[in-house]
Amino acid sequence: MSNDEVLMVLTASIGRRILAVMGMGILGAVCFGLGSESFSQVPATGVLLFALGGLGFWCAWKIWVATEGGIELTRDALRDADGQTIARIDDIVAVERGLFAFKPSNGFLLRLKSKESRSWKPGLWWRVSGRVGVGGVTSSGAARAMAEAIEALRAKAI
Image 1 (cartoon, rainbow, N blue to C red):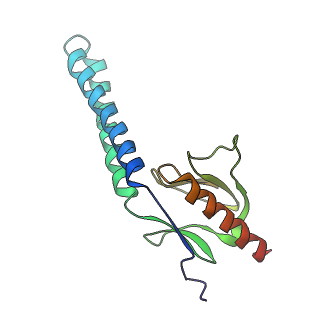
Image 2: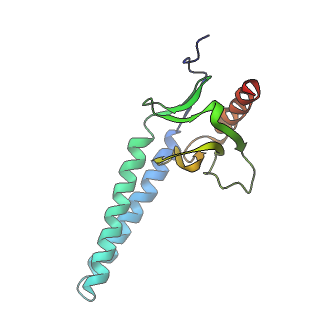
């Protein structure tokens, strides 16, 4: 078994994906609607609401594109389906799945030894400093299974 072999894949469920995109799209539409009504009375407010509406539509598009792929677990690393390394297994200090952990919905948090550059795939994962959040529009059962697999790989690496 090679170290590059994919052991597990975590993907976004289509229902959650559609709900996330619709939620951001509706937010964008509401901001556009409010902006068009308030523009004639207070132009600055209208411009702000148009900008927020555009941001909502942009976020909806980013979620749709980001959640097309998935997250792959190999013996060496957790990586994006595009091949970008999210976290190396030997760099993971802890896996947090508790109720009060600062983690994405239906997901888990990884604490890393080293600080990595910020990166983000909305709905799937984010990385800030020495923390990686995995989850969002993923199934909670599949995310739990991946967290347990990461813990098992860490135990073998120690």
